[in-house]
Image (cartoon, rainbow, N blue to C red):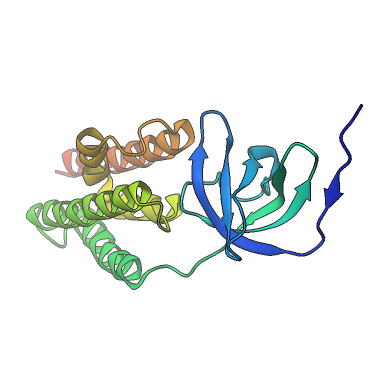
Length: 199
């Protein structure tokens, strides 16, 4: 006999305190102090990114004889930390340096220095995100990390993954990261060929 189900219509808020991305489930701790709720990946809004431990969420509650679970789960969109905004501003400046080099306006040392600066910044954000994950705190979005990588921080991202073992088991993340690497290498290859044939 199927267990009766009671669906709560009120929207609640809480934090995803545990999440197993491989198995696609975790537990939400409501902000009202009530017991943890089971949350399956199928209950999350498919238009948003995959959930991560530490995410703040809004949800409804469904109760059965077996357990209570979170349904209609949406991730809370949080403003970017000021440090991420600052990192993006520095990255845009570095991106301008890359293009200036391509058009022969600055020496090679300028974009090399820009890559070095952005790699340090990106490595720092990987380290901060890993520590936040370990403490079940709010995480940096993957989009924020990809923007830093695209602005020249991809060497730092690769080093961070090797050293910190962070973001290494997410195929979707890896696909975008290596696409960014390929774009940068292609730009450098085209720049080299242009200079070779022009000279």
